[in-house]
Amino acid sequence: MQTRKEFITTASIFAGGSMLFPSLLNEKNRKIKNVGVQLYTFRTEMAADARGTLQKIATLGYKQI
Image (spheres, rainbow, N blue to C red):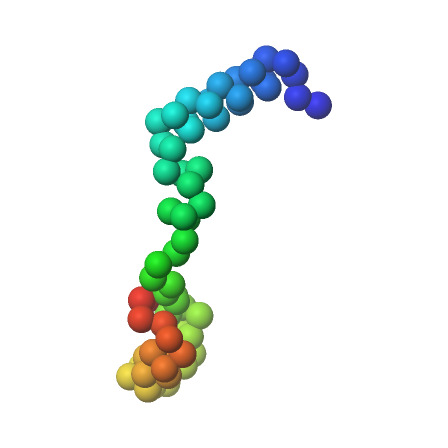
């Protein structure tokens, strides 16, 4: 259970942060514009054929690695 002091501290930090960084609360700014993929996911395929694997990943729509 949270004490009154912990609640007031947490609420104060949240209120201060929302005043300093209002863009964090805006849903429009949260959208990810460039979705990427980590190549570690394809480590075995990359070891076998790096160029072919990158081409297949690009055909899936991923442009960021």
